[in-house]
Length: 202
Image (cartoon, rainbow, N blue to C red; front, side, top):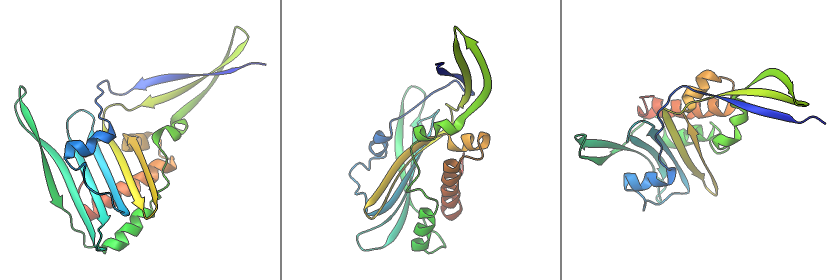
């Protein structure tokens, strides 16, 4: 019986890689002691080629009041010495915030899987088969976006919780426009941008 081998052609569109573990984000923003509420979403936006980090936080507090906040890092100094500062802002929306929470849930963000679970959808089957040493060889091409904007999302709706990180989701969506998970996440980003005027730089 012949075995099928999959060879991945890695097409790097960028060559500079910068990363930060999602678990470190709260420490950078100095919010590691903040309570995570029963109804809350946090969307972290990380720029791969800089120290820039942003956080959208939307939650229902202990008094059942809905609140939205935006955290952003900015640096001061020169190339030899600089300091990272944190700016916190309260966000407002003309829309009823409880209704907005329902719209967030309608993007299916509670069910979106981690990036590795959808990697197979980002493959291109070349359908180029060759026989070598009695074995059938098949090739798959995949484009890796390694320099852009990453998003880490953490959400809790009562007793249900979900978390995932998508690397360069908007760049991947442009190349793979039919991936349902990327479409749903784009709907979430569009909703946040429209209602709160943040995350405007892609």
